[in-house]
Length: 100
Image 1: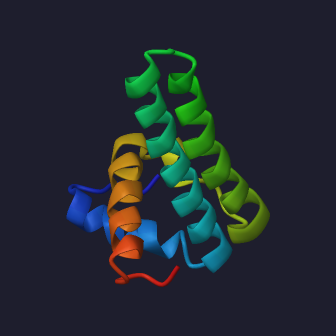
Image 2 (image 1 turned 180 degrees about the vertical axis):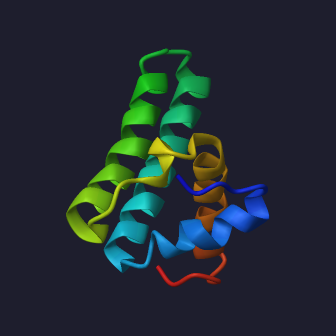
């Protein structure tokens, strides 16, 4: 297992694991749905939105990795760095730094 000493060191590796555009799109869609589920949780107080947020976020991402990127999600080996990097990539896609 590769060791990373910082998020700044990990993020380029993370982007390399997301070269496939469809995989990135699925990440973006899943993250957007996650935000929607969390908003629904806050608005309704119905706790079933919390597990739905996890299913949306990880489900879409993992489909992207297994079906299109053909690799194992970084979450399995680097869960915290991967979680934070996903939101950085989301912001980078949203701002046009990374193509959707």
